[in-house]
Image 1 (cartoon, rainbow over the protein chains, first blue to last red):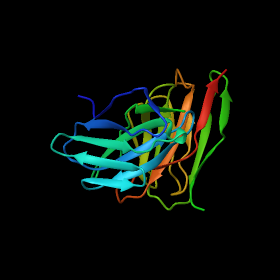
Image 2 (cartoon, helix red, strand yellow):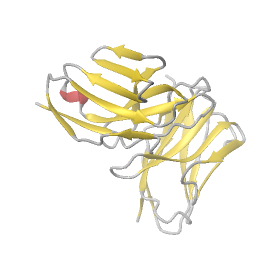
Image 3 (cartoon, helix red, strand yellow):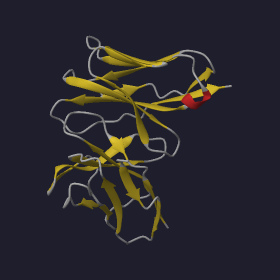
Image 4 (spheres, chains in turn cyan, orange):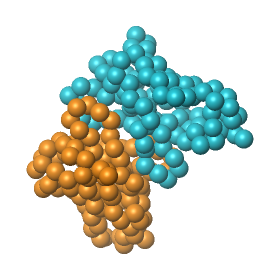
Length: 110
Length: 112
């Protein structure tokens, strides 16, 4: 099983809609999680950090399900500028390396 | 403002040449990393360093070398032994507290 698995998409979603996608992880010792967004030909940028059951920041909500080993990202009232690839990254305490999956590609359609 | 700077933004290399990619950070982060990204692919770890004068190989270290003589700097050399070096190279740093990475804006290396 891969350390991080995400549906690559692409997800094509109309502007204003709500979209959610999941990320499953294999290491049950993972303690913190990060969602990054990466625009085409740019560097990843940290979107949200999750250290407990979840986190909310404006239109973005991350929910962690440790029992099933997945973390989800929900985007409400989607905007054209939300079009990007979203990377889920688990982190284990004491392990300085982060493993990045290929991410989920999201396109918001006008 | 604190940040992480990579240079150059674009780099062209002839086959058989070594090239060095620069990465400098003023975030006072202990750990630094080099990743490689190919089109449509995820990030793959080349090398990482947790403290000055120490570094470890990542998943795809062959054909690359690094140094960490200063906390702020972590240059990557792509040697002629790297058979397929054309890629997008990303440098990142993080504190030792377990926070996420901060990335530089990347260097696009093309072999001509």
